[in-house]
Length: 254
Length: 164
Image (cartoon, rainbow over the protein chains, first blue to last red):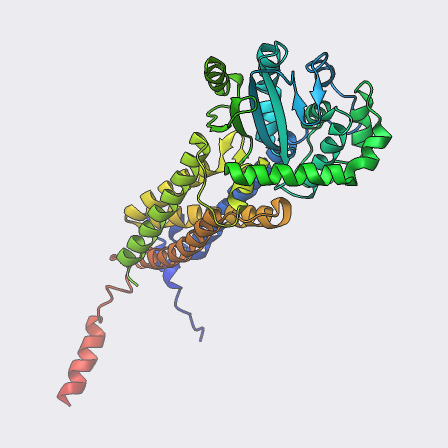
């Protein structure tokens, strides 16, 4: 005599009007698969976005003409860009790996340079910070070493334009040579050797102390004031030129 | 825990997560100084990983927590499935972002870690709700098991047994 087992509860339920979702394992599998897929897509988009935002240029490409031209004919003294007698001083605190600093350098700096620095109204002082990681430190040492040859801003702009993915080891000697090679009257070998110089250490320490005093907690951050006078922190609501020009006009009007 | 308690708990946690994300988004949009004791929040907030297709990660987080809150407010099996799916997605993606903070950026954002903790708790509660709701849906009121009644023959046997 044949014996017949009782059907499982789920199959009893699955009748004419039941939906296929009634199987717990099936539903859980669908939920888990969907969640995993969506999360994986988000992560992939995040990684691709981070890489593309950090690779405005590659280490093997030639420096864009933009880097070599926006400061042409403007005096540089150490970390300062512009005439020492300019009535207003704008201080920029930045990390060379910070994508927003690079964005400001691409969108606002050329306008500010053309309107205010080239015309002798404003001088800009770069105070570099290195809080994102090892490549920030390497890049900061590089630009401060270039500052010893009065070419800091050329290197700042060149590195921003070829900013790599964060802490990927993008600040290589080859990249530095390549960027420095596009700057007239800059000795690339001396620059590479000067990255560990005492003058570079001093500049980094001084910028860090100034940032602490100014209460800088993010970059880019700015201070502005009459040259030789007290500086005050500028609240920048946009990374375009329009975000900083009101503060410059205000300082010039004082 | 009852399904109502699970919904209430997960909804409360989702509201807390939404508040954290709203704060991070406000800081991002206004350029205000973020409250952070270790300095890692600034590094993470200014990292290239803080945006996805130009949308701040905090905005995505806010949308996610609001969606979780909405799912927690709704009754029914399908709402529990949606909540479980959203919570698992959030859990996996927040795990990815935590790895990025530690391994790539080298800084920890305390607000993000707090949101990760909330996400983990919501995921656990959502799975409990999912299990409860799915079990319930497999044994509806019309189930022959729940509504089983002794057949006339069985009842007759018991009746006869009592009489003897």
